[in-house]
Length: 483
Ligand code: AMP
Ligand code: MG
Image 1: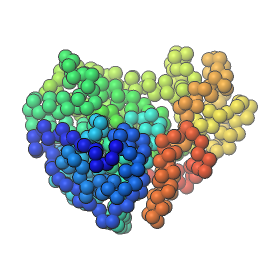
Image 2: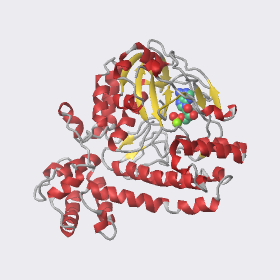
Image 3: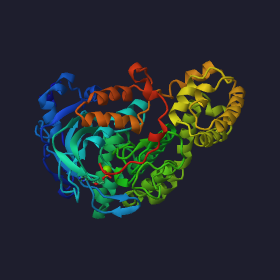
């Protein structure tokens, strides 16, 4: 379909005007296309050729408004690092409307009523990170928002004592409603308003519940289930979100708002990727507990329309459910079958995590190399990239025992592992290379990485180097929140 034929629908204006701000984007100077995403085009039936036009750049930049679109920013609240902030909102994101149930939003489009002290902008560095990582998560099968395209510009913003060029990512999601949106609507203390928001979330994300009895409780249960799975997948692949505030927490169970995130390089249980998170509230190991905390934060609002005790009692299943999915997946990553072992090989997996940490071993590279291991006699392909080999050698003794007990072979394990152990994971040092080139006006690596992100199990012969362990001097570095 031609860009001009895309008709956007806005369904948010059913809410009272105090919940949003109709506001036009403020375009950037001299916008230029960095990349567009064909897979996202498919989702909204947009012709790829259209994305090579100036119109497409103007569309992302906000100087071209499509038919049916009335741009607006949403209000929300949120618990940031555990403290309630009553007034947040899209301070730099602007919603354009939906196509095919994909809600389009540009990030970095200028000031809104919710910008507070911010400038309404997003810099190229963080925009490339969001653009590529949402597609990398999709490539790994981890629920996430998506991205249609990204533009760079000759406008500049001040970040960390430097001027950086401004960019805009056009993001797409089945829903942009956050836990923090409920926390904001809670100020009405009005059952009807909260029900209206819950009905909206059900329409977007849980349509099978629309005509059910106790649908609001069931919405919470579904969200809890989805979140348990989401967190299991984050943990399994070593993804750290970095800022799991309730305003960055999706009511649809998706990964949203990519900031100082990281795929951990070498395994470190208490790894903290966000420089601002001095106490490690959002450390890798805390993530499932924080997710549970964030879901609990909904209860004071939802209790106006739900039986509070039912919600609380459902939450008791959150961690066990999360753990079950986590163990199932981790077993697959080892080529094993969780159901064949009484405790789902929990001890073997815990021992592995300890060994990886002591060995200072690249987490995802370990699994990829294990997938391709041909014999227990020669572990060099794995041991050679460990800083300390002994802990892993010991773990292999335990692993070999379980493999024998389960009567698996290298071939049978390979069949299981090849589907869950990707060759490529977009680690921060890789993204950094693409960012540095883009700052020099060369966007080719962003586009190459997009393909790798979306096809992490495939071979990418020109980029073998990115399948190796992260060089130690770039590993597990903390990133700043300023973006
Ligand atoms: P974040 O930590 O990126 O999720 O942002 C928290 C809040 O600050 C959200 O309400 C954002 O919209 C807002 N915000 C972040 N950066 C900016 C900015 N440069 N200009 C305006 N608002 C911003
Ligand atoms: Mg946010």
